[in-house]
Length: 256
Image 1 (tube, rainbow, N blue to C red):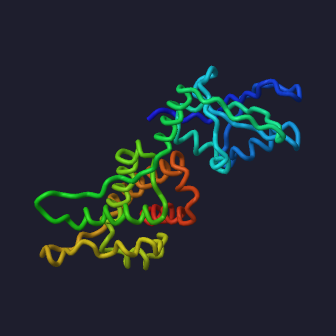
Image 2: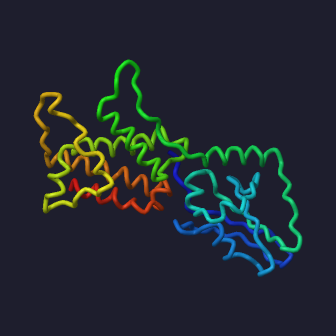
Image 3: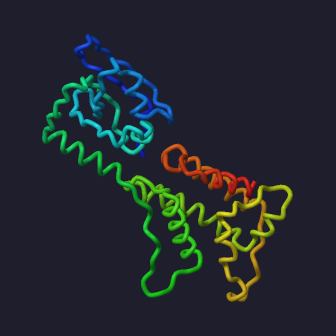
């Protein structure tokens, strides 16, 4: 996946107040377009139209007010070629309709497509019932859906599937050992949100012994799981806004 830009070239053309400038600005996780407008507005009786582009020469696409509260970093992560912002000073007395070219329309379509969200497809197999672990994967997808934890549509079948599969593998390995982990003094207990994934492996019906936990395998799951949650936090903003996101980190520490 291409590297995500965290520095923007911000350009404010010469306005009626005689102000014009270009700056390079680092973007942190909390900065919104609304905050940017307040920072660079010329006078109280004016507003700023904000446009975006992937090159300094455009084409420029004006943002709608509905996205002004969205963190800029999230916008960049969803649309990775975004590198330039143009701030146009507009008097509240006269607001002219922007001229939209066919080039800008095409850019808007591309941007909207890149902002689409999705989850990986549920597992399905022709000719047989799903195995218990495959059902668990589908249940995790539903959990993510219920929490509003989705991915850019272009990444749902790649990063999204990988992240959910990593969680599924870890949950499956300990599915018959929740009580053991919760009662251990040396590790953090499992968050309650994962209690629904207990005792999914019916080893008695398979007429086999319950698999024992080993330190090496637990550590391996922990390392892979932590890398996947780091991927969530660095690329997919909704995970940072979920109040229960810390449960994932706590869960990872349960394997240490």
